[in-house]
Length: 450
Image 1 (cartoon, rainbow, N blue to C red):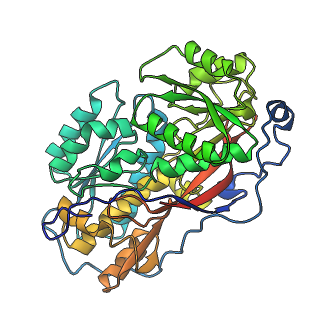
Image 2: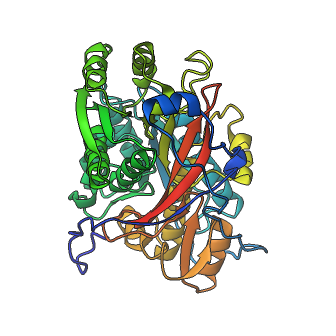
């Protein structure tokens, strides 16, 4: 994926999805292992009984190389400057802290190892807001005016659609840690849009299949009417119906809506076995409406846009037994400790690994390109993600590069092997279960290829 003249324009399309054998990870990231009887009484009433996790392990992270990092043989007159466009306000603000912490941890480790091409990397953070505001456009204008070579963000696919042409049109990389809309796979982005989160073709297939394995024969969906929501809903429905189920109701709402009684009533009237909530923080309003009308928590299935800590929002037990999916492998304990050293207030770690990996991949591609220019870095991103010696952090990987070796970066989010379209070609989707305190713990992770 590159905009250089000698390389053909990017026209790669998403290929058929092949889900690999499910890898079930118990107690990953400090999570306890739910028993097969968790929520069994209420689940049985709804015909929902999700399979218990097995004892097999999930993704592992390769060890970094020891020793000192050799100095770069090439130095740059222009230090690498990275901007972040991540949410500190709006309906995805809960994702901002772990993503920003992941960026800052990556920047710290790069600079502790001597920086890129002999100079420390600079980072500038700006708020992305959400699609109800023009914050993202204003922030993007400020970042481009500051001379960044890459922008990490946005988290929301809908927000990214409002700024992708502005960023890539300026010859700057846009690198999202959390965009999952399939639309970006074929976007005319001049080879400058990349992401470490897999397309929702994968999350949709995992969630649709998982609801079927939990015994649901019918599903209702309440869906955010934007690129993220409708795209994910389409893939959930496709997978669920391929597994023999039927979607009996699908109700849409728009960003900025505050009343959801109509959507909830229509979905419940269809009497589905399970309900998929494909929303952002609107779940805080929707969940009480559903449970107040007799929907049991184990009937509720959530997604990365709303699988969050609700311990301060709901009464204890409100979500006990509900499940949610988040792309990426489970955050490991050593990684969590490093993130907490950056931000001691962190409550969850969604997309922290993807954000950390985005920094490392940009820095490594700049080293490989011997340049801090956005188009030059983009031309090396695929190369540093595949077909070389495995490494998993900046010091170990840049040591290999400076010793003339080809590298294959595998990061905290799992294996990162890019397609020509800038998408991960393989990834994990984590499945989580809510506990009595309305926080969630890891159940299993499923590996799939795109």
